[in-house]
Image (cartoon, rainbow, N blue to C red; front, side, top):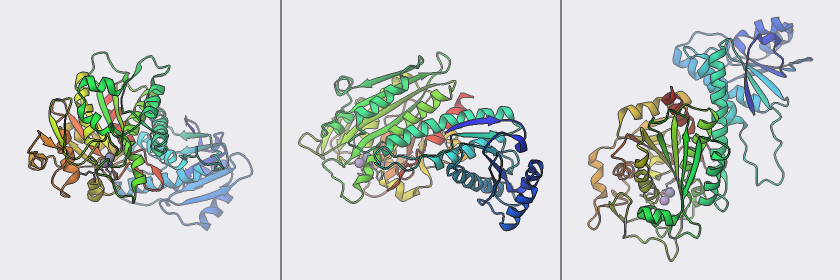
Length: 485
Ligand code: BES
Ligand code: MN
Ligand code: ZN
């Protein structure tokens, strides 16, 4: 769906469907000369946050949707929350429309202190979510959405235009991230991810894609990464996409994604219940490729590098054994006490690798632990950082985008769980206690040379039986937008 910013008058804009707040619907109706129909619809329904009253008209626009509650006094937080419910309701209504063009009249929605930029972003994010479908493997395709153009009408021209551009770019990125996540693991293997990454740089002069194969990774000494992919017949890939949108010499932001295209657990094999969910174990990689797509589409004035550490974790005669010891690219040795703690093994070598880019900040994103789901459920990603400014920037971007994260401790007290009798560290420790934190502690040992944050997205990245959420891309994108300005 294409978004556009529009100016002018709600009553005279050329569109098939006009979406207005209920609180000013009478004025709109009068200006359009349909006051009676509007009055009837308003009287027949009760205003509430997240409610939609519909009027069917003879001429264009043929639909008038009146969204939300009647005018009321409320504090700022309530107004923001109610606006978010209105945005969802408007988005669902619009995504189900049987017309080609609709216009959202944003200005008269009361979102308290929020400005037109945020209102537009929030509305269009809701539309992006409501309109997404994944249907390549359905023989009978569900009817495609009829709506093709969605305009946002506002007097705040500059802010709306900027918001529409960002929303469109994010929608493009989210489409890629969700599609990659939803692809089955027999299709979406490391080579498939590498192809998707190459597509990002095709025809873009300031974007380059580099793919390290296993031979190259062996030369670099990535013993931890290679230990994970050993059991698989499909070779692992370290995929790097480099976007130079900023000034030459500006240190890049680096995003690193866990790209386990299927996680059986390896020799420490998982139980069969729910193993199908492990096709989503590459959602970190999908989100960083999506972030790259969005950054390119928005032409963000920053330097951005994304790395997808892509491998399949399988058992087999060549697979790693519990108690194997490997040497990481950093030189530190790891005793693999559990082959199912593979994400940290591919990520640690990726973190060492990205040092060469002299990053301004590194954020890794991973469906890393079941313990994160126990701790935070689906509502928040777990955030860890060795840098407060970076943590705050990510968390506030997540708050604004409705894609929240919650900061967790990285205290030294937890590090001892990783002590090994035979190597520099084990890859697991502490049993069932603080599993997400211990995993973050492991990664922190490979991220000492730059401001670093880690997002454990095991609970937020997908909804079992339904599909990828694209999270935490909305937060990452806004973090990048803010970093660029
Ligand atoms: N990919 C899993 C984590 C996961 C679990 C993601 C559930 C999404 C939903 C990860 O590789 C894993 O297996 N982690 C282990 C770590 C353990 C062996 C220390 C876990 O969480 O059980
Ligand atoms: Mn695992
Ligand atoms: Zn995993």
